[in-house]
Length: 212
Length: 163
Image 1 (cartoon, rainbow over the protein chains, first blue to last red):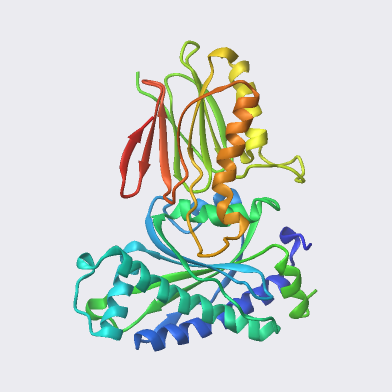
Image 2 (image 1 turned 180 degrees about the horizontal axis):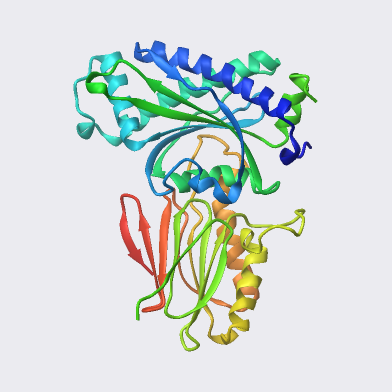
């Protein structure tokens, strides 16, 4: 298996490009779902110490809403769509308004319905992200049912630590941010996509991209 | 006398004399292990990530794995003057943050394995596990104070539990 810490700039760049293609597709899908413009930033490939994951995305104690899916196809990876709790709630409100004309404020919705809407958003974003990658490298696309959690950021990121912790002390992550534009009162909703390739999937990815 | 607070990061292991407050923020599948000897006034905490160090090279932090953290923290307690027969342990954490319908990949259920391995390792060394708050699907923030030897556990949406 490739030693993550020894990846060269070309290889990290190739992985980032994969993130770029995934993000473009995810942004298009989210835009269709919400009928809004979606802004995306340039994805980054990062090597992060597993001991510092908790702080890597901001205050480890902040409450976030997160959707997790597992790729069950040829490219083995996990994907997380993660948002501040406030952004997640705004996203759910917007989705329900857009799709069903709902005017019900989020505080009055049952938690089940919020989670279900959130997992739908996460599912569409992550599934389109992964689909673009599978098309690019020619692997079969299959994805798990999404899992949802609302909790402290650092608790959620334990999942990443336990994937990479079994192999060493460094995690390779592809990070990207999407934000919804055109909301009233200058509001902004953003969310992070984190792609966590299984350590053994990186070889496959680099081979398919012809940089190994 | 004010208690100095020590915040442990992932895979950290720390033993200190009272007064001290030992803190770990946002445990998910990880384990917060507390060991203490009230008579010798010594307490320790470890933030354990994974059950088993098998197959990994020896350069890693000992606090990372249950099988290496438990003997290491007991050794350190003894070195600082604790009496083995008086050392007691409490644990918190080991949640499963995401559940996928059907079969979940192995790393999602690592919390339960962390609990099991930590419990087994403590028993093997004859250390009494006197209290635990483990499992479930919520993260925990924990604080252990040598003022009352209690472990305070904060869980989102459930408030505070003291064990």
